[in-house]
Image (cartoon, rainbow, N blue to C red; front, side, top):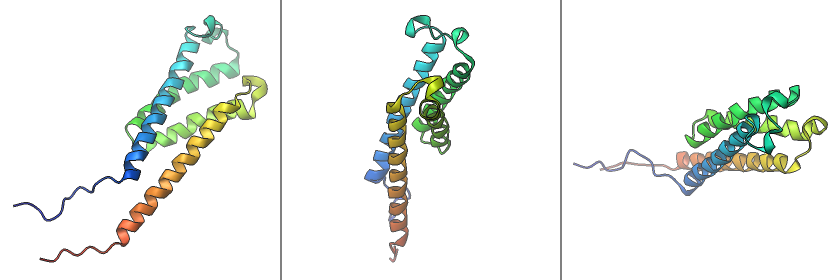
Length: 145
């Protein structure tokens, strides 16, 4: 005997696009983490940005972001609730580096703009998902024989 309705709700287009969006951001976060690690171990920038050659602000920022970006990538890829929180920490830290303290870290307006665009897109997806969930709850479902 088969049940009348499936217990698992079907994913909407917004759900699928949101997961794709999170996974694309996860790939970008992993790439940023790899860039920081390659800088710290001397693989990139001709070895001139190795950890032992950096000044204190760069040591703190690059070591922190080298750890936080891959962790954010994992959380975003798995679509768990803590993934966006860790991404906010990583993106916020990098935006502060390049936006608030350009005299120490240099200016990189593109990174700040990209992080802001990702945050706006994330908020738009969350609003759309909330509206869909609210609309589904308002629909009256009657299972009569």
